[in-house]
Length: 197
Ligand SMILES: Cc1cc2nc3c(=O)[nH]c(=O)nc-3n(C[C@H](O)[C@H](O)[C@H](O)COP(=O)(O)O)c2cc1C
Image (tube, rainbow, N blue to C red):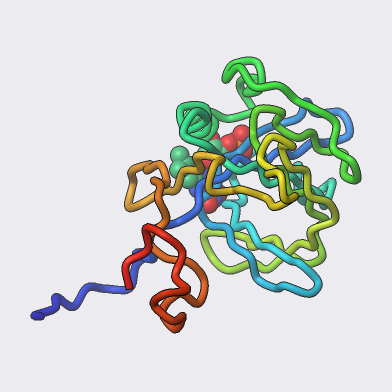
């Protein structure tokens, strides 16, 4: 397979796409769309988001040291795109995008009611990396749409219709799954249905 050698770039794909909510003492709550985010530790559960200092949300997060990561579904992709091209300096993105703010359980920033999973975060460190500042944060609470819990009490995130971001385009995650954790080493007859070895 011949390969082209390109200069270093942010080519890692697919990326998540999330709507991050933040709030200031006097400022109205805001929403910023973020692709540069990820889980960075399991215990304690931690995440990072990378935000350019010129974003309006950057100042809110620096001041409050809190934010909420709201997962994006297919139905929310248009709103997420909108929140990623408009600034809270100019408009109230909650009302402009038709999203509903709801109180979080621990942090001051609101949740987005329409998002199925809201991850409340408290910033523990900020790293100046260059174009972006990375906020490293502990997850202090998780809110899950109860309709995603099945009869056995299991979270069915596969039913949430989550979206991701791939090289400038949004994609919905499809079903059925094409594999699951550890399936490559499971005995063939123990494989769950619809999974090809
Ligand atoms: C799909 C997508 C992903 C984005 N990811 C980031 C990101 O990771 N970090 C960032 O600083 N801006 C990112 N942006 C840009 C901001 O969301 C955008 O500049 C937004 O208008 C900032 O809002 P604010 O000024 O209200 O904070 C992204 C935009 C889109 C559409």
